[in-house]
Figure 1: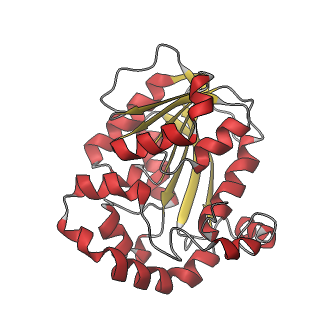
Figure 2: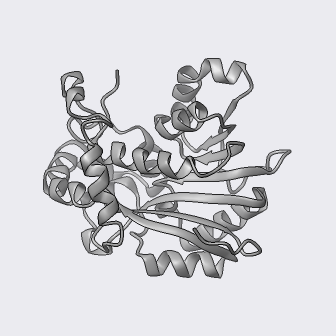
Length: 262
């Protein structure tokens, strides 16, 4: 069984709780990476589409979810979501994790507009983005990030794009903050050569990084790196969800005609 990083596990635990509030339906996922959120959505009764710029990411996704693809529950596409023709049907959810920070300002605006056009009237956008600009580091450079977000910048983005911000929460604090120096060391040692690549190539590679003790862990560590062992840390991350020092920001937004907040 694949052993995920503690920060990833905490994000998935929070996302699962939020998804439990939403009836399952059709989704569009942008930047699925190794497919952890895809797996969560499919296991929760969702079906939909995945877009990624990197062909190898889509190939791996097709291998991992071959059964769901055969059952017409998932359609992975190697394409730019913003530039692609919209699906034939509107969806209930547009979701991305560590994607929007790669977009230049103009493309980010187009992304928000395209997502709104794909959503049903009561559809929802969910995004997880890196937060706390004060913590900009080597990983942001290597991954091809354009920015780290704050609550204020997310509020401004959603409002200027015609969305209502329903919910926002900082995640992974204080675990990711405590591990950040180690993370920066590992990334610098293993991936510094990527700085020679173009921003686009760094973005494409960001969904399938392989850094021991950063993006993956030995199987034996699964006894402590699992949702059950980390549940106390999940409670702690929720207690500190308003912290501006959180390294991940989760938010939900809907087109402006739907104004109910939760």
